[in-house]
Image (cartoon, rainbow, N blue to C red; front, side):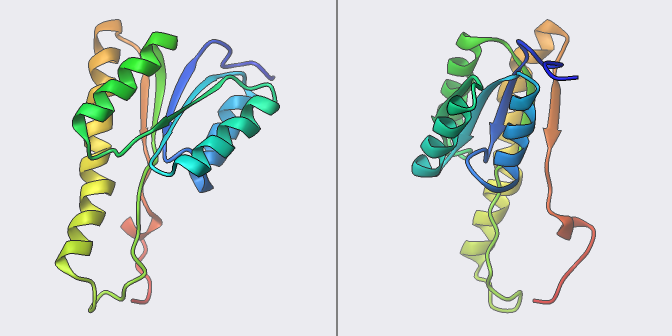
Length: 151
């Protein structure tokens, strides 16, 4: 059943590659309008070019999820295209540093991006969704929330 999401606007953070890009592809195949936000401009431009070449309505927004003003501006810009129906809060970082060696600076950066950034984006989008009384927010997390691993 293609086109189930026609005219639905999906905002995906961390949408330039990996899981976020795969999510964007899936929503795009269902004819959703995509706003991809990512801090990696080059990867983001490539993703949007490829999506558009496949006939998918996609827009790029370079974004640091920790910058509240930039998040608000990005959400405003996306909303000018169409009201956001779905937020996929997928932006996240990880460090390959072993647990016993990770610095407090690295630890704080992971928490800032993965937790606080998710909050900042969700709050900005929810401020638009609540008055309309519709919308969905999907917050992604690592499998390490449930299963640990060596290191």
